[in-house]
Picture: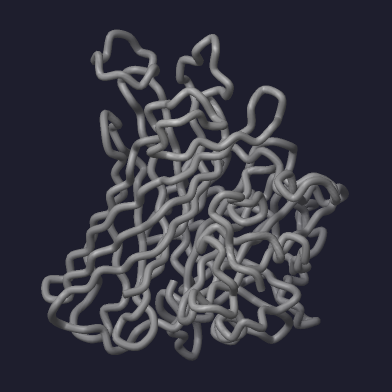
Length: 413
């Protein structure tokens, strides 16, 4: 597997594109989406990363897909029919039409399957071994009233072209080199089933992150999910502290901003964002803090050409002018769950810097490997700025500038 390229921020690793019907430029594979876990399995279901229980109405052929075809006219269709019900699994953030969906209780959950008979634990082992399966399925239980509107999970085939593209988590790092980052992309496309799905899987030594998108209907990502899992740490330090340095990738949507007449790119856009991450863990009191610093924003101009703004540059760029939100950072704050050496998960909030007011901003993460050598997590934040030009003049009307950004982060110490 090839490592990731920060500049390319390729479409198929954190893609905004709504997947078209095959072929085409690699940056177009996931087509213009609007925003666009932890593995410790018990015997039956389990905690925040176990196999979990999935009710798909029976599975006589053992393929992981239920036998209830055609009972509701939508089964197997991207139009809906999902009846996945999980008592445990990988912690997941879900969005519908670019909006965060708050579970009725707890968090949304998902499990991964790399083939018939492979539960979440076996699939995790395959992902982390570097020999990722050639097929993959992500089953999502949103824990919301609209769970049934999601497509019934199916196995997606690996999309080799996408898998071989640069991976934005590590610039220029080879999968077999020091970073040990591995990336795979999977796709399922069916006009008959109204299905245009993309699944991305990033893996490190002891943890992984996933992004699922269903771009049925064209430009809008009707359904999107971010999740993470791996070999959860069982000997978390109980004193001292650690700093984890790494990368994050995200998809973002901006709207209701004022576009200057001479702008090369509209501020109301769909973006691929990537940058560096710093996560601080205080193992004594369980506090988690951190910051995600965007380095590049990539979107399409009016001619559908890709343009990138590199944060912190003073020279001419490909995405003029310099919009306010380009320079916003994301602060992470939370607390570890439980006590002692097994408190390997944490949760909290994400906050946008500057004049943004932040909401709908969950953050989840976990520790992986011996003595918490890695951390991986996911986030979402919805922000509004009082001046749609990005200034600080205060609220003078009901117009606001909006930003939604969500993604995954990883770091090692």
